[in-house]
Length: 257
Ligand SMILES: [Zn+2]
Image (tube, rainbow, N blue to C red):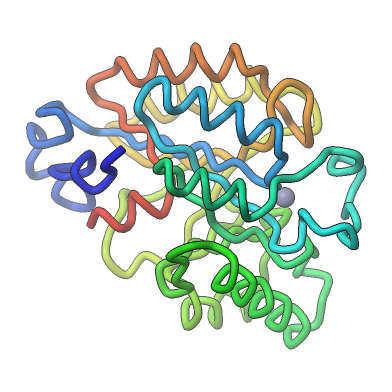
């Protein structure tokens, strides 16, 4: 998949309002939807990538730097006993056009940590990504806070290290624009997310335009707030067929502007 060419012509930022007819595939793009898959569950990630590829789309995976190591301790019951992918898998998926971004060193809730300790964990996470993930550049990265939990101090400091960060605060974001350093997302759990996700998409499509970032996790019962692979397949098929909608990973949306 050639993501750059795929994105060529996407109307973003203020341009979307001024030039309503420009867009991917010569269509009217008014909405961007990012399903932001956290935690890096091996089986779910492989299946998610396959489903996205069926529609020639890139998936958005946010993985834990040490999640694949034996010494990794599950931070909560939703990650217990669910095998995670390693950087062999992440490099392969990246090569296939998917986006792989950091989701913490060990999935700590940074709101509960002193600033210096939280900073140290983020820097160690970025170091591992730089060493292990082909072509990874911190300055081009989206850092996805575990639990979507950040602090004002961290939010002020983090843009000196990465391009943008994702935290909690609601699913609808301003359309992508230069200088954007903070993305917010919505999610649901611990049960099945399908109805909630449908409602959030409905809300987006009832607006004039917008960018929905929805925080997802595993498929078919894996992890916090899962959905079925059949649901994801049908959802992508439906959205991909809509002229006004683009489904894209967060980083690729921002690289396009
Ligand atoms: Zn997580």
